[in-house]
Image (cartoon, rainbow, N blue to C red; front, side, top):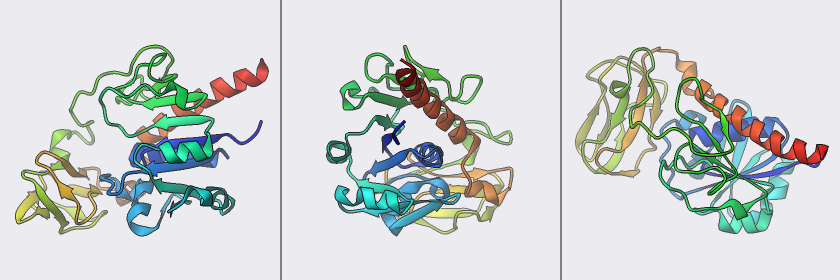
Length: 269
């Protein structure tokens, strides 16, 4: 079987977990992002390459490109190409991918795009398998996390962060007002309740629990009131800030299953 070409919309935490597994499985992966990514789990998000030029996650590197023509040579370097292409249209026209994955995690109704590739996969709620996309991957924590759905939808977004170490909403840092985000701490720093983690303009963002800063928005990003700015891991293990999470690995496993199901079945036929 030829090496399959996979285009992923989004390069945040979940998208990066998917890209990491598919790259390690010898698929040709390319990612597209917005000009100012808003991922907070920057230690494990390939979108950091937009700011830094390159980003490594667990031994796999992504490289920011300015032109799609450089994608093949980037694959030859053993790296994942990343382009700023908000809807992925230009990159899709160049690549003609075998698989298109929408991992933007927008959690709202998606534009039908089954014609975008022979296999189109939607990550999480907002997609209808068999209508908008060929398959949907469940993203809610629980018994069905990572399940491949060939007909229907994923569970709706609860709006409640997953519980870690007994904490849910308390571990998430949010903007109390709009403005420019300026961190006062760094990813992997240990914080205690009451610590000023960042400021939005002159308004402090304060930790509500003790733990390790696992997620933190990039410096200088313009934020809106209520927007997620970061998260604190109460387990206190710094290595969790820089390794792919259990959730991302489960979702990536579902994506790989969907791809093998479609293309191995065609091969057998």
